[in-house]
Length: 551
Image (tube, rainbow, N blue to C red; front, top):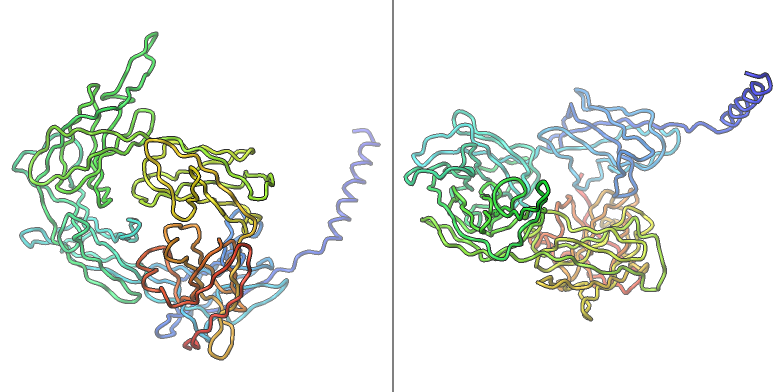
């Protein structure tokens, strides 16, 4: 290397080192504390304590500049986390069979921490409580215990499985780690019937059975689980005959596929064929049944358990089509069913600002939220193009609301102010998609309203870590994008930003809610909060005054 080049490189390195030496190193922080059992105050070991970078109630992803930091409590429930960059963090607690308590108290620490450079925060105290448990026994129709049966605790609203277990040799099961809530409990035999050859007419098979002993979800018992308690849900497993459903699909367009130098029109069995699925009307996916549609449109679905079913068509090119009529299977095979698919359509539209500004739409996603969410098995989402246009493919007939989301905080105060469909404003009411596709003219506004304030006790002292919920008035409850749930900070302050103009109920909760748009939740809490009405772009302040927390 020539000496001149070497000298230049050495000079550059020295300059960079000098610049780095002028940048003060960030002083790191640390925290220490203890986790105890809520009821007795006894230390709780093997708890994972994690600091997640946050901004108020929003926890950042692990791709954030600040790392997540964690530690595990020792036999005395104590923990220590060192080397934490300054900033705001949310404390999360995790241990199998236990849940973190968010019930208000003067004694326990806030889970929202703001760490200054070099701060050593000691003496934090957090609490957990035993999770809810559902246990019971599964017996057959003779009253004998049935081992090896999968048991699921299912949310009646979302149909998600929230916990599971398997029966032991005595037919007993125990589902631990459940949150407070209502559940359907279902026995799901591994030997349940599947698609395939027809069962013998006299043969009965164990079927997915809801507590206490029914194939029909609408007849099932709702089991309420409470923290620290054990609810009982015994199940009498039902065995049933299965039946066949035969018929023909009319109006299904054949799929053209190239074969060597010719083109073959293919509708029936084999690769690329269309399929018919019978989906349970109660959304129990364990009992759905499938068959291929032959070239002449006929189908033969075997091993169908009694119940109500909705037919769906999956075409060779991946479209999911609704179909009619619904099918009721009772105590006999069904033949001659005539199925007509309802074609999916492409919904197009434009997205624009109400003041005519042109913005970068790339951080935005526009979604169609179906009123009946069981009608859609995938999000109906579109990217907004630079000119504001968008297209959402494969939209089934039904009623929808427009929801716009953003990955950028820059749009936090923006709202969808209008959704015009065929000259009618349908933002609150929703719009219907039928055989024809409506054109959506979606207007956004940067003038989102804000409801902010503080939660205080009877002495006027701020209440940190409190859930604050905002639900719209009764005429807009199907519009899920205008519900909000936030958490008060260390000063008891909260801010509900980006609200549409209108009337809301604002109230506080001691414990976090899983789904504030659940009609049961809304009914249970309606009238408990303050009624606040905001105009477009208006900012209103409220004080939520609550009784003093328990120690």
